[in-house]
Length: 66
Image (cartoon, rainbow, N blue to C red; front, side, top):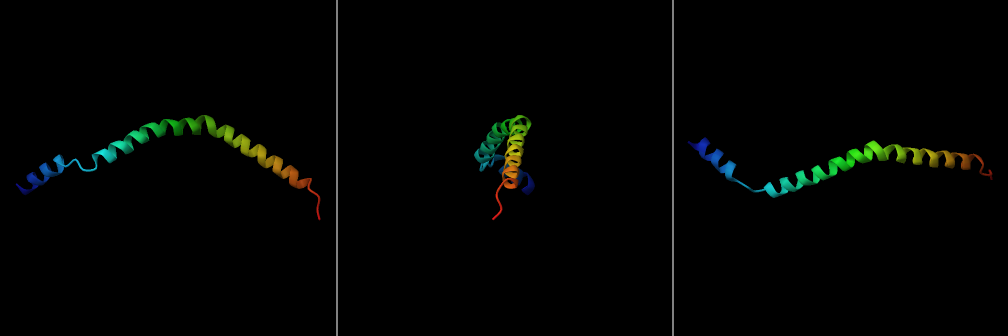
């Protein structure tokens, strides 16, 4: 009987349910955004980064030496 009472008590305990629901809602919103950014945004970010690094390297090669 003690196990049965413990299971009933745990089953009816609602503490923390709002926090879990909030985390799940945030994850449901953030996951598609993250997938979109990785799928479509990352190639553009990578290209922008590589262009900037190439420009920086070219500028360093053309810089006068002291």
